[in-house]
Amino acid sequence: MSNDAELREEFNRLDDDKDGFITLIEFKTYYSKHGKGNMNDSEIAKKFADIDSDKDGLVTFEEFSQANKH
Ligand SMILES: [Ca+2]
Ligand SMILES: [Ca+2]
Image (cartoon, rainbow, N blue to C red; front, side, top):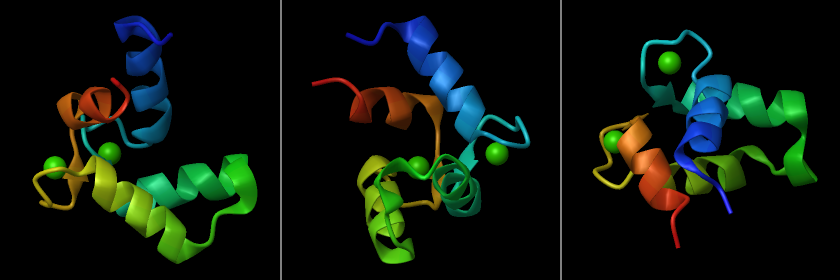
């Protein structure tokens, strides 16, 4: 179970420049650093697009938390 504080922490790890949005580049940087499952670029891009529900190329905390709630 993720609570909001944990989600916020995860979001901040992904948001490399701390501007409050995660870009695809930050997302890729994170996954290449942490090597989660060795996803390739297109898989990472697909995952990013899934989270970016309004498709503006930026993931907000709101989108991120929606994507992590089931
Ligand atoms: Ca950012
Ligand atoms: Ca978005």
